[in-house]
Image (cartoon, rainbow, N blue to C red; front, side):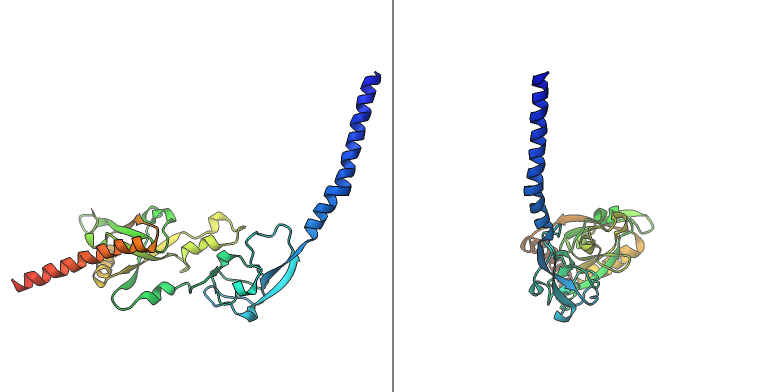
Length: 253
């Protein structure tokens, strides 16, 4: 009985000691961590998606550092001169995903008259690779239910085509859904509705016909570095160069 009582006494003393350690050691440490502050960048005026962020639209403020995202932006220099990738509201804190170093429609500035941008409809989730396509992807376009005979065709003119943008029915870039706030419900994210493609005039004409008479499907060919992607585009351009040479040769015969 004495041994049992002694064990209980030791156990009780140990519990008291641990309580003291928590109160005098760990608790102050947690309180100090919770009270630590850090400077972050905050929006003071609404900024529309695609607009340039200026110095008048941001401020640097001190807030509690506890549970802030690790990548929250803390320097105004990292924000000013960037483009808003989403609509920014007064009071918003800023993360890198909410900003873009280039204009959102910068791809349109690449048009120099030799190629064109054309959008085609994604008529089903599967037709657009289940919403996984991204700008700079190289795809092959396939048409199903084409024409009166409802055939399936994979034109050589559309074997390697660059994706410029993936757009939802609202007109906003679907890939920007990844920039949505973390608390946004998954089912609120918009699915892709159209693909904008960089093509030659002959390809644009063919795509318009396929869009009107069939259902287009995009098969992903390549996603990666720009140099390799350009090699696929060069192969596609070479097809048209060879085709034009044959046409001119036939005209001379």
